[in-house]
Amino acid sequence: MQWTLEVVQVPVTDIDRAKDFYHQQLGFAVDIDDSADQGRRFVQLTPPGSGCSIQLSAGYISDLVPGSLRGLVLVVPDIRAAHTQLVENGVENDGVVVSYDGLAFRPARDDDALDNVGFVRFSDPDGNQWSVQQISSRAKS
Image (cartoon, rainbow, N blue to C red; front, side):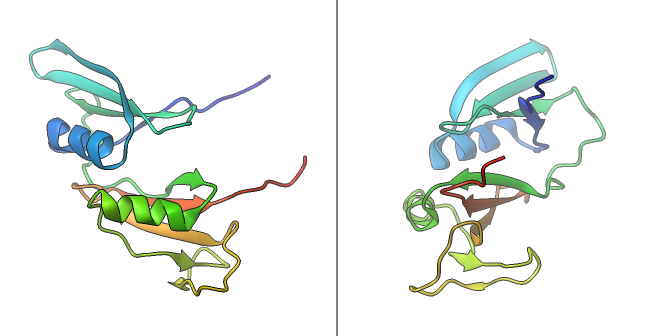
């Protein structure tokens, strides 16, 4: 049986502001922007190349707290290029950092091998926290 993760809810206070951030600054494609009725709206966006989308919604899930999302990771083959793109698009971030244990981070050096251990961390306008990780090759299963 194949199981795929297709959609993750991202709690936000202002759907239009969040939509602009994810679409304009991060380059996510807008798949759906729909209102079911007064007070209920959802926007679905997909990162370039991803099989998983995010949903921004209002009036559907009342116990999702805007800004509480943690632990989502976007994967890229080149973390330095991703960092450059984030900076060019005005996304505040920590810069390229290295972590060997997922707890301690230090600024990356020019000679660091970044595959699997290179990250850039940022937050959306509500404070939902994201990481971008470099993974250019994966172990064979």
